[in-house]
Image 1 (cartoon, protein in one colour):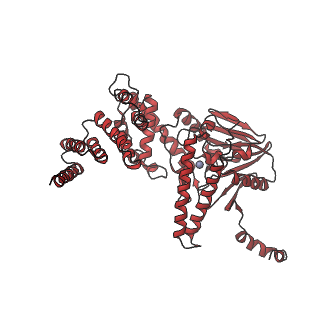
Image 2: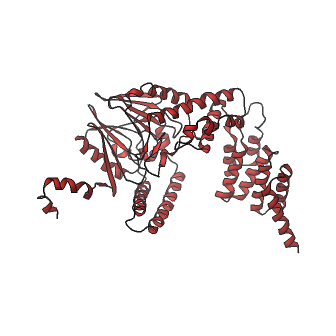
Image 3: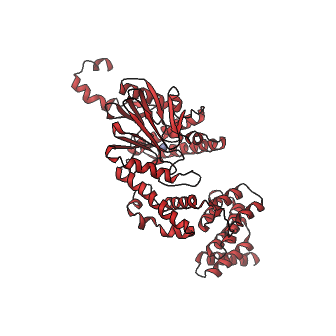
Length: 481
Ligand SMILES: [Zn+2]
């Protein structure tokens, strides 16, 4: 067959070959997008949200932005980039941020200068416990995908999608199991850095704190290309948006909102030079308007929340003053925005401005570690102190209690959280109701009855509490008869 093909007319070959011989990388379909004669974007897969890898031919060698989470894929993609650009003088790799699905292929470019934000290396390191957890999750994910694949008729679109997701999950699992030595960036910066590659400048700037601690924007003005890593996207090409799915300030991720805003403004001032914005994964798109709207959102919150915080308004009031739907109607409809993420961003901006830490998280960590009661007391006593270190939100403490109760089935820890909440917010019928639920789970029926009674006393409309009391009463009558 192959020998015969050589003699077929050329036109026929051109018609037949692209469909018949789609190129694969590690068993996944390869995509090559030529952005201009000297710039190429490559990625694998049609149904998995993989990282795109972008290669730039410059006067001082090839510059690559990002790797995938799988060195096996990156080795092949490096070959594809070299073939497409017609050269193999790789000089530099830039990581848009610390996450493994952007940095785990760094080993493939260990012969080049690797550039990233100064927080990137710390973010790449994982504790052995975290690694164990990821490996366990991957094992479960593979088992789930196998089950999913078995459900679909062979050759159906759903089967094709499941098969590709399974293949990619296996590749990731292999990469994690191999656990190779980390290859961390060799050139780092804190706020901005311009790399002169002869005919091409790469302007790097921190835009972090809303996806990871180390997100940067990579702007290449001479090619009109701005790369924004996983910080944001406003349109999805698949139903698996992956890491681009949220725009949120999370607790535990260090922020520098003023620097993010300053760098954002600098980029927007040059929007006439931006022709293409490329998020970190192939299946997300970002418009200039979407980029601008997200920066405006952070700016509005930084100014507005900051002002209320300085006036000494409590966080509950600040949340009420910035409802997502009413304040940011366009963003509320945009992918990556929801009430939960928005509330997290508002809280983080407020915490940054006031310097207060989240009491719910501190209490959760203490209870989870089985800390002695004095340590818990010390945090609880902070409420109402003249120079507080923490802020306390009733619904957050309750949420942590339900995490113990429902997700982890750690009932004594759940009760401990709910008791703390009842102590901090004794006038809330809801916290007593939750405490009743926790106590019932531990088998303390008498304690549960008292908690539910308290809840119903505070709110005679509490249907759930009344039902629980009726059930407890009926159970007592049955066991005594
Ligand atoms: Zn990613």
